[in-house]
Amino acid sequence: MAVMPSDFWSGWIILLTVISFIGLGWLVLSVYFLPSSQNHDGEEPVWDNNLTEGTSSPPFWWFWLILFMMVFTVVYLMLYPGLGSFEGAFRWSQGGQLSEHTAEFEREYADIEADILATPYIELTANNEAMNSAASIFSEHCSACHGAEAMGQANLFPNLIDDDWQWGGTAEQIEQTLRNGRLAVMISWQALLNDEGVDNVSAYVMSLSGSPDADHPGKAQNDMFCIACHGPTGDGNPLLGAPRLNDDLWLYAGDLDSIKASIANGRSGQMPAFGDLLDDVQIRLLTAMLLNN
View 1: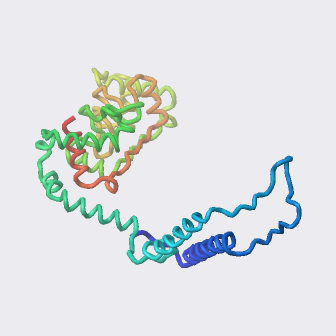
View 2: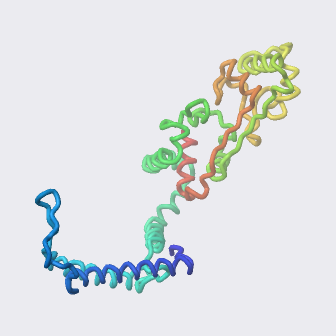
View 3: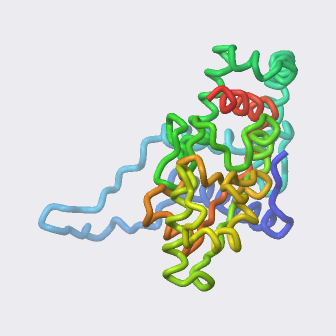
């Protein structure tokens, strides 16, 4: 049910409604039934040579129309909420109607949802109807960041169709990411490395995807500051959200200047949680789709 106004605001709503209603009734009566106070004995004033004040009464059918509307208003306020916290005889509300429709929807599709939750991921990915539903969910909730084709965009949002998963690519890890969101932070190393150190480490990190030089001047600093998160060979750590550095796949671009910027200034990214927005069936369908990509 919708939350009704507090007693204070409820009283004001009732007062304003009643005063407005009485004022309208008085206006109608004064126009149609009370004697006019205008004095027509004297000469009527004239403006712009030929503009005079009218003396014709309004059509009487207006009175019946307004009366009908006033009666309708009284009946409506008796049956439906409109006078402050008074809920009306029918006790109707938008919130209550939404709850009824939601319950009806859940009853109608309960068996289908139970089947989806019980179906293994491998079977869901082979179900075209299920994947079409997952694509619709992705388009509505995910494509704004990850792109319509889930390929990422703007060197800020990761590609979801490759094999590189910052927080792990198993069904359990993807589901946890969707439900709870993620918060990744790469701290700034400029103060510790200085410009020369940033240049050396950046060049060494670029070499990890090829044939890293054990005598490279950036290796010692990489081993000192970077392997705690990214591992000694740059394999990354899904538990920490530390990405792989040795696969030539880069979220923030893989050119030397971009890598320098990441090391010198740090990076931060947040994946919002969808656990309260999507239900279990929607999350399972999305997980299956992402596994299939």
